[in-house]
Length: 488
Image (cartoon, rainbow, N blue to C red; front, side, top):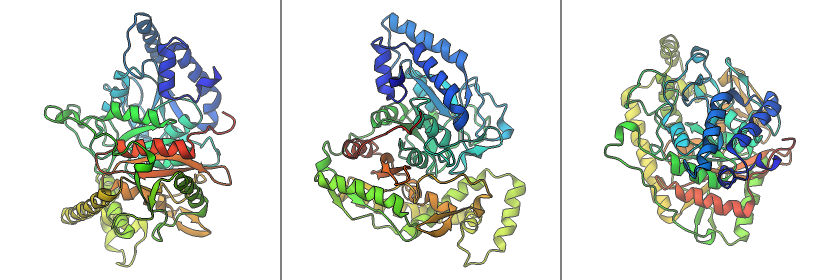
């Protein structure tokens, strides 16, 4: 049985389908692992064993009748606690929502269920998914299985920790500032941030639940829902399942993603953006990525040290401003009104992350429209780049998994190559692709001298998600894939 812990979802589905293991046996196996390993991680914060057992039993009965529900038939999965599941609390890390029991599944969750998955748990997040660490006043702190003194990242940190420790086999996360990609990087996993608008957000918190109970709702700018897994083939399958319009758009819209541009690694034109003075990359991360690139070059991959004709500083400023507008829109009046007063006292020379957040959160709609126009210019520069190149390789974040730090967000600091930097630098590289709506796949690239995982970010053209996913598969065949942390 121990071999099942780190199998892919596809492998487990095949084992159930061919009778090598039953859905009930596999579920019980994972529930036992959760009981054994989760206390030191606090990755899975809610379970529903009885309803999961009932569904697993039905999955086995269906197999006995020769019926197959779908490609995830009987496979046990967990779901990030920002996505609603019928009958389970969905808190988004907020005490105000600790008793919120949804009456309907999030659209993305329903996609997994329709494919036959057995949902048995929810995974931890920060408050309203708003941090690159995962802790909150409802469930506490989640630890990284590679080093429990470090965070697995956020906001999909519980999801990443559970997958990495072999407590589940597939997840759904969400990403506005790296919330799929950073946890994948910190925990040695695969993760995919889809092109904006191709996976439904309906049933994700935020926005606050209950406001939009019917087919219409708010799609938060920049934010996407997407998969995390231990296998790139699982990522590919998950995107097949998840890609769909929002419910209100399905009368006249479908999602048909193009096939990958190239079949073979030698034919893929790869650009590089490995470091930048605006958001320096620590040598511990840069060295691992350079080694991976060298190995690809040895296999005759077409790699050029070229990047889109965009400025990191300008892109980052645009990202922070548009991100702050999203975050500020959901802020209670008492805080927002204080921000309106605080922003008046800022020096024009103050370019700290707090200052930029205050300006972005309180900006005039006119200013937002101007910045959105700048975003469209940036998108065109990226589109021009992808006429010559198929993908871009870049870091996910400047550091590997960091130590837990629960100070006030803007008081936190990180150390990059011996120099202090502001904490929010952690999402600088994620913002490059996020603000311009591009797909980005993260793959395990190796480990630092301390043994911490490092991820590689592979950015692809808009709506061509299959291209970076396929490139990720081919690159992984050269540099390796997921390996489990010791002790699990």
